[in-house]
Image (cartoon, rainbow, N blue to C red; front, side):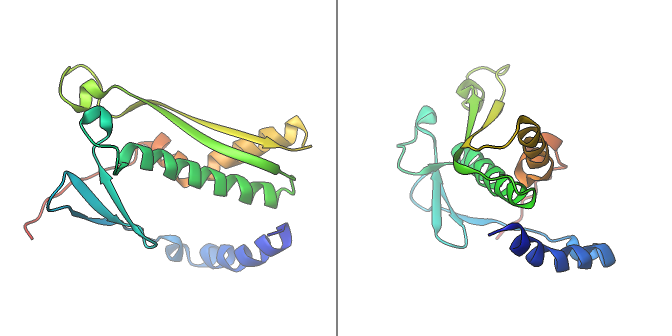
Length: 169
């Protein structure tokens, strides 16, 4: 996709959202079902069934997906798509490239071994590597805008309101 095609697709959406701000608010949803036999949750992805289970560091077999890995994968996917869209919009040519995310966990917290150990990622690093002839100024702008418009990055960074409820089936 080139800059003209991207603008052609996005222009009517942007115009609609300017004129009807309420149209821009969409609720994304995810759903899963608890596995009857294993410590696992079957997540409906819209394309396939993803089965998440315990990480081997918490007693899992490693055969199921780890939700922590899935979180990092969502960050990589969102950041990669955002980077490509911004590069296209700014007409910054990118040749081969990769996006990686790394996160540090202390499983003592998750397993309740040490009450002072945090549950969750203590640090997450997002790394972009690509081949380009762009100037450093262009790359700085690309990174700045990728951070600004990446939904998953901004969600993790922004500490959104989060609620939990339970209902009987």
